[in-house]
Length: 368
Image (cartoon, rainbow, N blue to C red; front, side, top):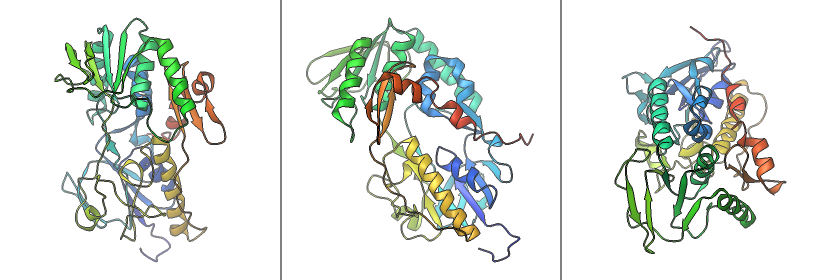
């Protein structure tokens, strides 16, 4: 890094998800920030299921990156090879920043995450998926984690007459380090909504039709239960996006493909290469954790750049989650509050899906 006080150090952030955009935003005033992402807008995918059942939400969940930074720049591109601090983009351009932040996140089956990088195309794809759902009488959801539960609740809230089947090989819903009281409350509400639960037996095979497309579905569980539907959704399958890493950075990944980081969120064996969010082994894959890691890393890099303040270690977060079941249902578990039901879940998350909290960060003057 240059010792010239008039030269701001360069920071490249690869990926504009919940962690990456925060690092870029929070360092915009002290560094020469470049944010790189293949899409032209941040997708607030926490609210993607709400937009699926209510397409009028689409304009609220896509936030243009051009409105994020005041001093820095946004580059619509994708990293294809990163070894150390040298970044090669799909366009052929290269970047060699003073600090590099890997925040490329994870892929997940559509429509939980957008299937296309272009916003106009992504919105059109989601509107088409809404029409498929609206025309279906029976819906099959495979996976009873947070995604499957939320989608079941959204469908029953907007289309109470639809028959929704939620299937999972696990004997109970919502895997993870959560109190059984939370599972019991969500289970009770799902039954009350009329969701049919098929738990504890694997499917003999997944449907051959693509998820979220109109097609006759007829499959069976190993226990012999026949499951039929007009559309199905794959509610599992997080895959970290780390295939662009080369050399020592590729070797820093564990057997699942996650990047190993130290308590400063620095990639193991690197000095000025950091990684946050879904691609790391720092914590569970949750938007809230990625955002918290982005805030902590930004504060630590600011301290290093300005030589003011001290760095802080990241600590794994205690078990916490809020699972809305439509705007007025759901339950959650937060540190210090324990397990709570529908009223608090709706007030904290379910009613507005944290849209205003995210959109306030994308308020820079439009450079156009």
